Amino acid sequence: MEGLFGCLGMALFAVLFFSATYSVWHVVVLDPRKRVPAYLQVSKVLYVKEGSWGFGPGGNETGLLVYELPADVAATIASKGLPFLTDHDNALKARQQLVPNFDWYPTPVVPNSGWKGDGRRPASINLFLNRYGFGLDFDQRFIAMADQAKNAPGNFYSYGSGGRLLVVSPALRKVIFAYSG
Image (tube, rainbow, N blue to C red; front, top):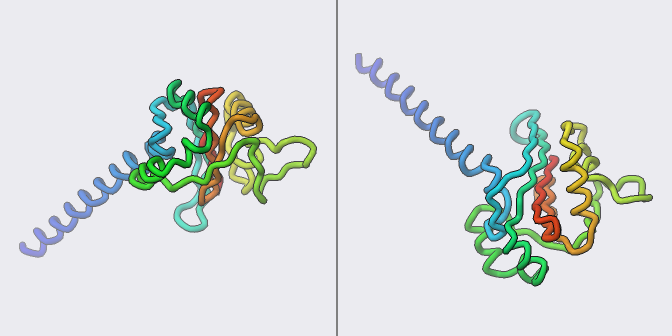
């Protein structure tokens, strides 16, 4: 009888442990608002399309998320630019949020090695998202918006580890988070 209660106790522990882990994963990691620095104050997600093939090292993920940038934050970024985005207090807030620190640059985005395009015109964000052959059928309105934001002066971008690209457009009042890795 003791063995039965021990097995039931272990099974109950395993269920509770995995349920808690699953809940934390969905609330902290998969919540789209938690993927960008808190100082951008995004609360409205306008578009999300993501896919995952495999798990762990060697797995592939692709996604495009578009957020609305609040008017007051957009105005602050438009007037202060890089000094706002690279502010020490903002970097500290990002680390406390478990979002990596971003190295910000003014647009247009300089494509990195995976998506240079043909050199005649700026590479589309589609090339970045599909560079490993694990692309998705994204809504072309949001692709066009991302291309406009990454190519227009007056916006800012940052590459992140794991194949991430973050573009902030105060003029469009949008934040674009694209990843492919």
